[in-house]
Image (cartoon, rainbow, N blue to C red; front, side, top):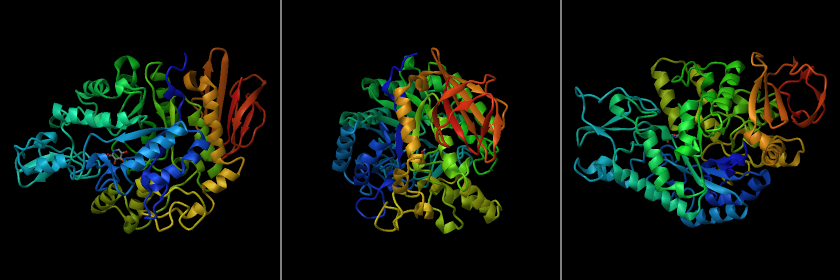
Amino acid sequence: MTVDKWWKTAVVYQIYPRSFQDFNGDGIGDIQGIISRLDYLEELGIDVIWLGPIYKSPMDDNGYDISDYTDISPDFGTMTDFDELLAEAGKRKIKIVMDLVVNHTSDEHNWFKQALKSKDNPYRDYYIWRDPINDSEPNDLKASFGGSAWEYEPNSGQYFLHLYSKRQPDLNWENPTVRKEIWKMMNFWLAKGIGGFRLDVIDHIGKDPDKKIVQNGPKLHEYIQEMNRNTFGKYDVLTVGETWGATPEEGIKYSSPARNELSMIFQFEHILLDQQSDDSKWDLKKIDLLDLKRVLAKWQIEMKDEGWNSLFWNNHDTPRIVSRWGNDETFRVESAKMFAILLHMMKGTPYIYQGEEIGMTNRVLSSFDELNDIESINIATALRNEGWQDEKIFQAINAKGRDNARTPMQWNADMHAGFSTVSPWLPVNPNKEWINVQEERNKEDSIFNCYKKLIKIRKNNPIIVVGEFKLLLEDDPFVFAYERNLADETWVVVANFSSADQEVSVWDDTDIYTPILANYGDRNYRLDDLKLRPYETIVIKK
Ligand code: NOJ
């Protein structure tokens, strides 16, 4: 196996623009802020920025509700700022991957405003309309942010479909004119020289709402292939599809080069393991390491050499991993590094979510007026109506809510963490006093420096990119260990996924192997008799 695509060796850094860096002093992150931090990203060593949506939007869902696909929200700046970002990033060999949100638009998009005018308006069929059935919703499809996925529109007496908030009407992909409009818009961005697209909830397109099929619908792959042919297929770019419910078999369909669809997928099977069932995000369950190992190993192996996967622990929709499955108090540094090493030594393209590289944590909320995210607000209200006690509601929201990952980036210990000169749109986590970029950059053994090393190691060692993966100690409930193999080279990663010491034997020979990286400082290791301290993680070469 050789590395045939640049994005297989690349490391992606996700920026949530609202929370990364405020430059103009309005408490909201912006494009000039990002430009001012490009040197930092270059120092970290990343190759690609996945830029969250910066388009014009009423911000009902922080930009995932777009009212103009070819204009920039004044919250973030102007098109001139964007062009400058592209040029400045390019100088540092960093590519910009845009967030493409085309399952739905904002209800303030001109297409929807036109569609509302009358049933025979040419834009009506850009969206999905149905007559009532028995004076009620066409069926019981639910929206991700709570309630029915159908919203009644009184002037026409019809319902329109919205899989997210009612201010995010779903586009009708069956309509060829809609598809052409989207290709045109994508080509507008590609012509500027962007590095690709992250395709928001792309598994919804091709849906059949009448049969209640909203994921992996019958036309999904046909539409993606058509998109590839008409847009990015002509460019050497990275495309990554957000595919919540994909299986490895589906993953291969999306990303096998022979099928001309996407570069890779971004799937969540491992992330859904700490809930009672697939559709019960707020019903908490403790993570079981055996499940986690099984799922991650399955994806490593079953994508074979045909499909390509993203590697990630967190993003703007999920809690911070160090708080979620690590220990963000006593062993924050050790567990943050453990997660980094475990992930970055696997096969796939790693994604770092802003702040993860300095071990940022969840921020604990305790009252309704602290909630900002539309999903948390809706769910808290719904759970209260279902009779949940506030204590249990906040336990769930503090564990899973999306505001956790969206607190401003902690650059230094100043009043607003160096993020802004004024009070930010979402409060800074008070632990910015000791968790911040300035501190991390200064310390040789910091989490930041661990990420830096991992990125460098990946670039110089194809074994990480394309080597075979083998899970070790499958039944050990506390230790996560695996092997990577390429030609006659073998690397082993062993991690203590717990706050207690663990003793293991990985192999039964008594040799000492070459250490590559460890989170407790370098030392030599014998793999027949390992004593691992809390979250201790080592990578060695045979
Ligand atoms: C997935 C995005 O990551 C999330 O933030 C958004 O709310 C939904 N898609 C709807 O666009």
